Length: 285
Image 1: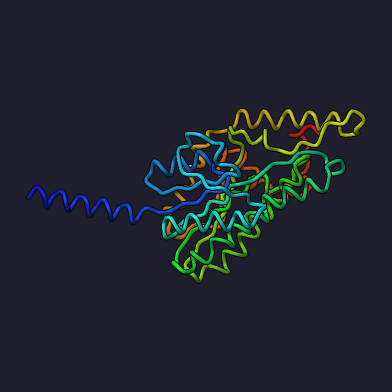
Image 2: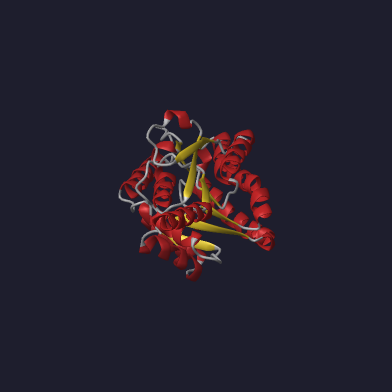
């Protein structure tokens, strides 16, 4: 009787392992990606994060594979590695991204292109890499991490807003294209969270003779203050777990404090000029 009981436990354990969903998180070495990966690992998911140099990261709470979203060869290699080890890939969380600040007039165009390559085209290339496996499985979920800033053009963050807004629209399109294969695609737009995102931004310098010197510096200080006082990234992790457990996810999700989410509603109901005036007052322009 004892041996049968142990055998039954072993079978149930093996079944649970087989049913654990395999998750790939781009940009999983720090910030929101790390918080989400650690949380999902604790919930029993098989999680792989990505980093451009995973060997340099010690004692990470989940597995890391090498991937640079601007390098298609590394994307293909990372996806192949996960699938070869686990036999499947159930969830992609497209989280890798970078920020950029500065007056558009003074920001180098090549720096703008780098941010588009990371935030938009990088996310697209990772989606393209995982879709064949998900189509073969007849199931899969892609969660694109965008930003509440992607719903509006913000002063001195217009390029960042544009990259995230573009990814929201791309998601709407590809979602319809792949739905017939049993694959779901959705966006989740975070507001300000307490992470190290500011350290990875491209900051256009505050030039001494710039006509934007005063307003740009004030807005840089305001942005940093928002990040420093931002919410706990665990809220993003909980939101993403809820999305994963939702059979038919919505197209758009927003995660942030009330006023950040309410700003999107205001944009829909106010006139363009009234909403612009509201933003300019907020940013002291």
